[in-house]
Length: 239
Ligand code: CA
Image (tube, rainbow, N blue to C red):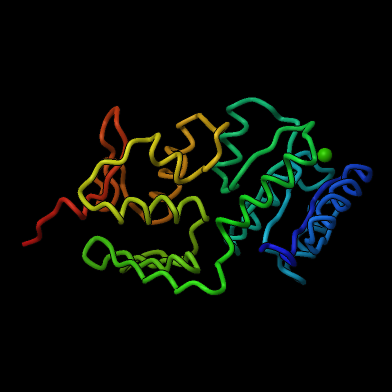
């Protein structure tokens, strides 16, 4: 179903790069690869991609810089691969807008499984009806779940990451209900091994930053202490 998706592989170790190309091409993906950050950004500008596999430890321009540059212009799903193993570093990568994180060394089969999972949840199914445009907080925020583009009245606009969009759509689908971090994690991550609920907090923090939603005086997403989150708008009966 995800055949012919284009994947940009950013990896400076030639042997690993060749191995990734081999495994991914065998699954039917079209591969562009790059050995450093400059080449990666040039390739993305030229050809685009449905998913980027990004090594963080690169010569010259660091992977984190590549990630930020991609995120400034695109909501493309990004899977980080890195030998940096600590939770803090994983969280930092997710906070910067990555969709998933795979620690090195990894089994190539796990990588291709993650790739398939990310594409399954981020690529639009061609035959399905488009998801309706969401209007939240009395029209203050408008989100197109298909393209993940949003705009805030009198403020910012841009594109949410797939995880952020899923989280917001899930909150909007259950107005007035509190969703626990675990429930939201199931929606955002859909991965049994990603058990650290702070990922949800990271996505919420990213959403708040993008949308200009102040955690101390929220107009959209309210923190329910020790439980989870809910939409503020759903609680407001209006004038
Ligand atoms: Ca490297």
